[in-house]
Image 1 (tube, rainbow, N blue to C red):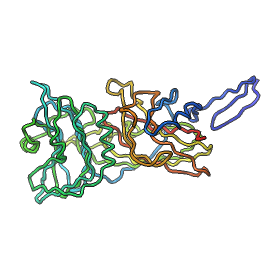
Image 2 (cartoon, one colour; image 1 turned 180 degrees about the vertical axis):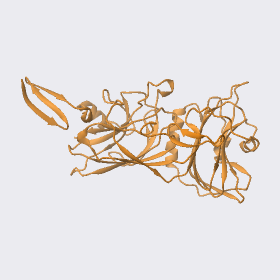
Image 3 (cartoon, rainbow, N blue to C red; image 1 turned 30 degrees about the vertical axis):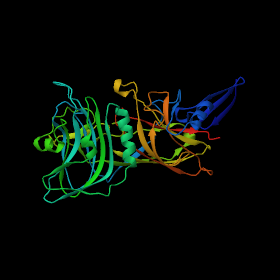
Image 4 (cartoon, one colour; image 1 turned 90 degrees about the vertical axis):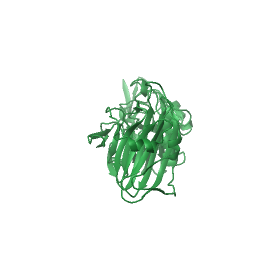
Length: 399
């Protein structure tokens, strides 16, 4: 016989024949004491196992997405593997102002033999006066077969970068390598060249990503190559895109009493892929993955039940083929239990694999009077990882 009905934090408890049975709707899932303590004890960025918690069916946080002013954005990832010893993988015209460039290309030369190459970004001054170029942000890694490390470290270095004070001068009709260090690196077969740049110019220009043999300067090869090699319409794509920065605002205030919720960006569905153009053909280009786009996220939250919020992320696409077995990212997150700043995810190993593994990003503590607070973080879809990478907010008992 049912003796008593009790509602607590959205859950229904029933006292039946001396036994207390509790059922929680999906919007009010509760951590058991052991998992709660596991999250509270974990260092920031650590991999934490949360069996039974992570699922793509968690309730989603609705949000509004605002296009913010930002630089012209170029990405070179089609073809990802450059099979020709001397080739241009990307070539796009840019106008005076700020330019963001993401280089993600691999030495794929294996016919008639595997060779070492150089892959570097080049800018040519197509204006009539001297071009002044200054790097605002700078991130490049040595060529590597560890694509996850390049993606994670690349974002970390980009977030930490500060504007350079020096200005380089490019005469009309002349070109230089955007990154002098990248120009000198040697890429072995199957090694990824990964660079992420933001620069400002005061003349119209032409940006190219060039592969050459070790004897030929990239600027020389760039001058004699008439057009970029054909693309196959795969990977993230290539081209110039009009959207580089988003501001994301939750539609409603998050309340810990409503249980575990997730926010999903860069899924190609509720957050569509950014469109642009591809200079080689003039066709519409799709930035599949929105890699390199910056999301400034702002979530209002409150605690009406005294609990805090743990922010975690996980590899939701681990079973989607051989390329999705790991996930690594870097974010900038506001202050909580841990200080505000850049955090590599995970921080205690290279990648997270699959559920039940989660990565602890931050723990936000409730206000003493339950008043509304704001969570802020910068997210960018992590290079080399399959998308989406959900961000999950889990109510935690701080006692």
